Amino acid sequence: VSVQYIMSAVNDTKFNSAVFLLTGIPGQEDIHLWISIPFCLIYVISIIGNSVILFIIKTDPTFHEPMYIFLSMLAVTDLGLLIATMPTILGIYLFNSREISFNACFTQLFFIQLLQCVESSILLLMAFDRFITICNPLRYASILTLLRIVKMGLVCVLRGITIIFPLPLLLKRFQYCGDNVLSHSYCAHQEVMKLACSDNKFNNLYGLYLSFLIMGLYSLLIFLSYVMILKTVLSVVSQTKCLWALNTCVSHLCVVLLFYTSEIGLSVIHRFGNSSTHVLQILLGYVYLLVPPLMNPVVYSMKSKQLRLRIIRLFIK
Image (tube, rainbow, N blue to C red; front, side, top):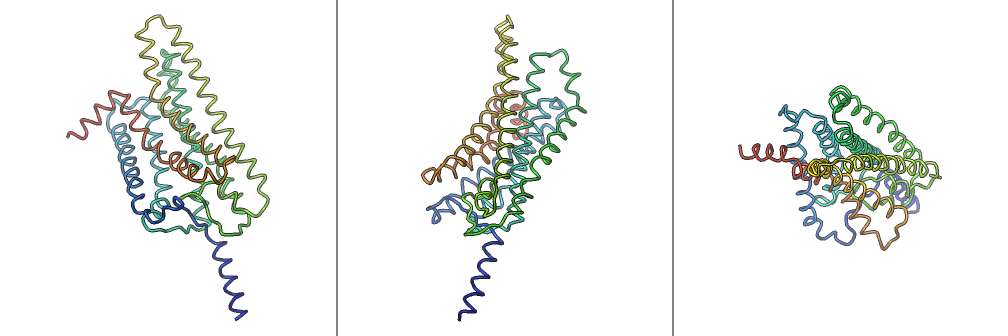
């Protein structure tokens, strides 16, 4: 009996060390199927919205402008984020599938972090586009050529891969013990790092460095670009031109605020939250991942009359 008990304990230890257990909304397990309905709607609407944006920009030559090319990059990034998170989130709420292997978890974590990093870089490029449009319109076409835009997009991806790739490698080196229960429906870096029994000081410092780089430096550069834009706009005598210039920035500002507000809020709760903020942390995690891909097509189609009319004609036909 004692031998069987020891073998069972060893098997359980191996099982626990081989997988992580994902979590839905605590205490709501009985209504997970009902909770899956809004998640399914969000995924369907987000995928359709971003796909429509991509289709229109690709097929209609009138949208082959820098602003819309950057928007197509944003749509591709959002689609990638939806694909990366959909299997585990819907798996929990539809099929109660909580287990995820270490390799699958680290892979998902890598793509989530990479796509978030790339999205922040694209938002910075879009701010640069608005800055050139308003502050130096005569050189706009010569500065933002198609070749240069492609190069900037590739730099964003390669730079993201370079700085995010160490994260799963560092996490894979750690030993994990206990229940290995994550508090989200997907693999988040800070959550996985907390479960490590090994010394993770370096990983924690590297995570802080990435937070400073993505949230701090990028948001600062976007802020400075809008300071220069505002300075230029206020120097314009014509009120009509002033309002037009500001209106071209509204959609981008809304997307930036949506992205950084949820990201900063989640980061703060992760580092300083306690058990009383656990549900808020989970809900904000969903907002952080799912609301920007849902709202980005809506915001840009609402603010761009040309894009909005093209979408209407597409569906009417």
